[in-house]
Length: 358
Image (cartoon, rainbow, N blue to C red):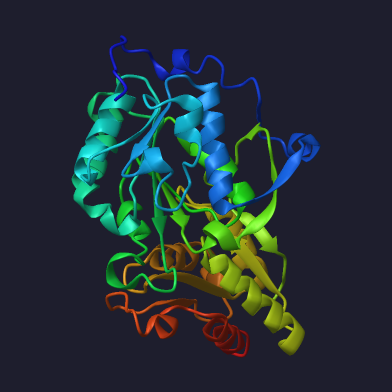
């Protein structure tokens, strides 16, 4: 176990060597050599960069020392040692408590919650301790440089306790950031930004994308801005909003709408939910006059409700049709009926037809 015996060092002083390789400009990224990665290898690469550039960084969680259930930590223990990459007891509350304490001493904690479904025992630590640490001390102390990584969402056979999408629970918590990437390059850049953030971050990783999402990813050190959405495809007829694994579903629906119906949709990948890119969304909806929001989580009090409310407040006079939400059902996540539960491309395509023809 890593022994935290050093004196407190402020985050500003601690980031002594993080800027050497870091790049955020798109032009700089284009100049970087790249390598084909899927999402889990991109996450692995981000943690390797973090461990190399910050000698206070540690990676820990259940089975992380052996590479983790989804192999995201493969090779890190061998490269950086057992005092920096290590297993924890099977206790999410303990993982969160240790992470908060370690980060509050000015160090960098990269904690893994093995499945997002298991984050609830740590809810009190995250919401009542991590999120409020800076506020309750009048900004004298914080536990920034703390990220909770956790696999989320449907995977085809996870059923009730391995398929949930609990992101909305955390988006009502001031002091947290909530991130969910949909591509390997975003996963690496957003994770590095999360690790180096001055606030604690919940970093959701859609497990079904770990091996199915593949692309060229820059090999160097770079960050993707948290709170900045990505325009996946441009269009003028309808705005489609999503995040995480749902982006691949929405891409298929948008392509079918274009080829089969002649409808040009603008697809927005939020990438982060707290903060989320209100300006990008409202600019798009003002242009198209129509909007569909989709996510795997249940519809009631899902994050689509927050987006819909904001659009209604900010873009009411531009709307040509009611805002549509295509989400999971308000039931526990099923096993045998998973394919009926999930919002698929057919449901989204029907929503596009309805909204455009309203």
